[in-house]
Amino acid sequence: SQQGEEDPQALSIQEGENATMNCSYKTSINNLQWYRQNSGRGLVHLILIRSNEREKHSGRLRVTLDTSKKSSSLLITASRAADTASYFCATDPYLGANSKLTFGKGITLSVRP
Amino acid sequence: ETGVTQSPTHLIKTRGQQVTLRCSSQSGHNTVSWYQQALGQGPQFIFQYYREEENGRGNFPPRFSGLQFPNYSSELNVNALELDDSALYLCASHQGGRSYEQYFGPGTRLTVT
Image 1 (cartoon, helix red, strand yellow):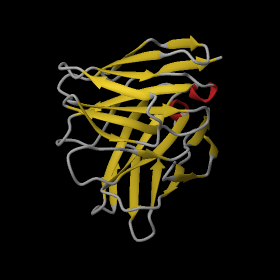
Image 2 (cartoon, chains in turn cyan, purple):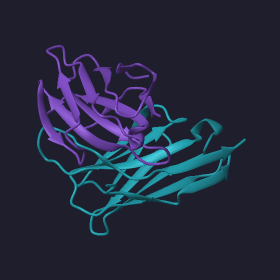
Image 3 (cartoon, chains in turn cyan, yellow):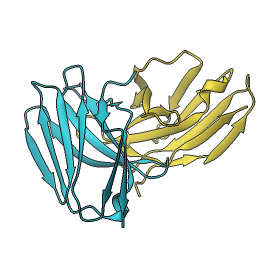
Image 4 (tube, helix red, strand yellow):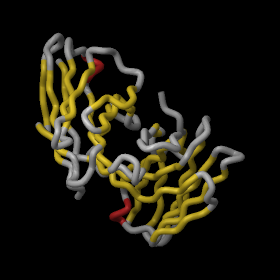
């Protein structure tokens, strides 16, 4: 079963615009991660935010986490055509050694040149 | 590109047959997780191996089984294939106990006819 739910399911924007994607989840987490997938291939890790963090930045990416609302958002600034992909949030409930991820259904982002 | 490799890339099997998928983890990683991704869905956790022992299992029947070898590479075996087993099978590795970010391979596309 999927823990996370992303919205919107699909997003189409113009190159240079910002893209905001949201994720909601149901149970307690240790951390939340965002991944990108191009054309049904392997997933690429983008950014991880721990449950005691509220905001994190990495290059053009900004992720926020609100544990009281069980939600997260991923902002991609100044989008490029190469950002066209599917984006997934994944929750990890464990404090201990081994990460076990529960993914949402994903958001399809299309960036028009 | 991560250092995780999977073989084969594509596979076509008939219902009722058995299949073995292989994964080589990234150097230095001792934990491998397997995920099933149906078309249009997010990956679903099958099971995880840590230092050659199963370390957690998702909601998959016993006909899904696995192994991890001393070099931390891994196999996923599926017996009595069903049409619904058609999916992209992804393996991911990480260093258990030190990091939560998972490194995914490119996947094996399994089609069951």
